[in-house]
Every structure is written in structure tokens, then in C-alpha cells.
Amino acid sequence: MGVRVQEVDVVVLGAGAAGLMCAIEAGRRGRRVVLLDHAERVGKKILISGGGRCNFTNIHCRAENFLSENPHFAKSALARFTPADIIALVEKHGIRYHEKTLGQLFCDRSAMDVVTMLERECAEAGVRVLTGARVASVKRDGKFVVETSAGELRAEAVVVATGGLSIPKMGATGFGYDVARQFGLRVVECRPALVPLVFGGEDAARWCDLTGLSAEVVAAAGVKRRRGSFREKMLVTHRGLSGPAILQVSSYWRAGEVVEIDLAPGVEVFAPLLARNARRDAGAAVMALRTILPGRLAERWVALHEPAGWTNASLEAMEREVHAWRVMPAGTEGYAKAEVTAGGVDTAELDAKKMESRKVPGLYFIGEVVDVTGWLGGYNFQWAWASGVSAGRAV
Image (tube, rainbow, N blue to C red):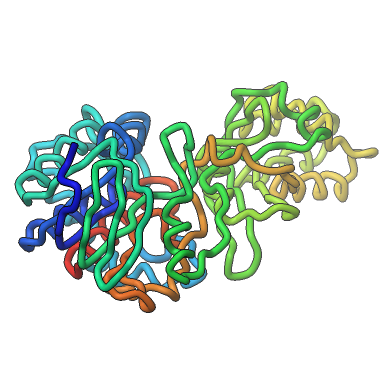
């Protein structure tokens, strides 16, 4: 049994990337910090990230790489702790890493190296870590009172770093949103993000037997200010579409909207068929499209889009269609397959420099629980580090 009532300066709820970084930063400043997590060990989601290699940052990280009701909110924290800063920490611990594609940095060996680094930094900063500790309630009577399965903690500040709803089998819950609402803070509606999309019945029948086929495409989704477009790989699955391009646009997509896919970016696929005396039939169209797409995908696409006659106008129409395949997803694979949760604690409720509640002094929200959602490729880790550092310097 732990001490029944303990007086501390800061209680951090959640020992993921954001919570660990916040605890380290606060501990370095001499604050008495207790870091709590209901899991049996810290950094569980870090360990499965990046296929077990932890895509710990992206060297191109900017506020434009994030979705939020306030697209400017992330700027302050991201400027305080940059990719160069996390790289310096990784290098200090002798962790070898590499750039994969598009600025994504991964550990050479294992995500365990990053968790070990954070655990060592916590120990050096004097942070007390309590794992397997369930939080029953967070109240305030002058100080914050955190009731846990390991006893009662009284603190000047509470930092909520409990993450979102994605990957419930890892223990994800809506606890952080409940705390926010309890203290009167608005929560932007949550939804799965960086998640595969699911076809409706008709599209499933047309495409899902092509499971495993992939192509480089430009996928776009969303409307007006909330629109994203990405040139990356698309993958056909047994339920719909996935791959980096689709995961990226899923964060921008809403139910009832179409996803537009350019299957042949920058290429005039059917130009050879427009030449004088060129062969014009389905076979020729498939041959042209096979230079861009896997054979079976090219054959299926032509079979479903074959014109009544092979005129110049019908070929031009086919060309337009191949660059603007309009898909109406029936939904997503949900939180079970989502890498992150979009939405969360409204940024209007928080001070952008400190991550502190404007209404409730001493109450902070960081990481995924906040309405800031990064692109695929290390951006969400950078937000976790940066928002954690901002709060850690303020508590």
C-alpha cells in the first residue's frame, strides 16, 4: 500500500509520450512530480508505434501539419520544443535512428530505446512513477485531490495526458474528456483519425477481392478550410481502402462526403490511344493503365468504366475519371484501428503557451486529449513532446 495521503506539486495523469515529457520537464525544475498510469508499464503506445520502431518525430514539422478548430494553436508549443530538440535528446542517449521517407525519423533498433530513455530521464529528474494505479476521481478544494487505487494525492497542479479513444485494447478510455467536462471545459466532438476507410456494399463487391493491391495516388477529402490532399500509397483491403494516402485523408473526411482519388498523378494515361491509327478498345486501355496501376486493378477499373464508344470525347472523359475517382466510404474501421483521435479538449479553453485551462488555474491538458491532430509520420509524437514540455515548464 502507498502512503494514503501524499502532498506533491504536480500530478500527471497518463504515462504516454506527452505525460512522460511533461513529468521530466517539471521534475528538472525541482517540482515534486507523481506520474500515474493505469497500465502496468509506461509508454505502452510508444512501444507499438511505427511498427515497433517508434516514428518519434518528423523533421518537417510545422503547425500546418495539424488539424484543429484553431489551426494556429499548436504554433506556440511547436516553436518551444522542435524536432531538433527531441533529436538532441535521442542522440544524448546514444539511440541510433534513420530517416525513412518524407522526413519521418525512426529508431534503428526498437521503440523500447525511446521508452528506456524517458524512464531514465524521469529517474534523473526525481519523478515518482506509479503504474497500475487507477484514478477514481479528480476534485478541487483549493488544491487538487486525486483519488487513486494507490492512495490520495493532493497537488497544486494536475496535468491530463490520458490520450484519446484510439486502440481501446491498449487501455484507451475517455477519462481525460470526462475530467475536462467535469471542470466545465468544452470538448470538440471526437472521431477516429488516421484510420482505414470502409466501402459500402456495392463498392465492396466491385473492389474488395483485389485485397493487397496498392498504388501511389493523390487522395483528397474534406471541404473548404478542412481539406487535405496527400500523394502516397493507397492499399485495397478486404473491407475498403487503407495505406498512407487514405489514412491521411481519413482525418479530414466526414460521413456523407466523398474521397477523391487521382489514380495516375501527373500522367496522361490514355494519350497513346488518341494517336492517329492507335488501337482503341478495352485491351489497349488496360495496357495503358497497367503502366501506372497493378494489372488486376487496371483491368477492373477499365471494366467498370468502359465507354459505349471509343471516341476522342469518351477517352477524354475516361482520362478525367482516372484522375478523379470519387469514392463514398460507408465509414471507417473505428477506434480499434485508428492511430489517433481527432477532436478533444477545445483549444479555446487552453493557454497556448502553458497548456493550462483558462477557467481552472492549475489544470493542464496535453497530447492527444487536446483538439490537435497531426498527420501520419511522426507529427503526433512531436505534438506530444512539445505540448508536454510547454506544460512541464509552466506547472
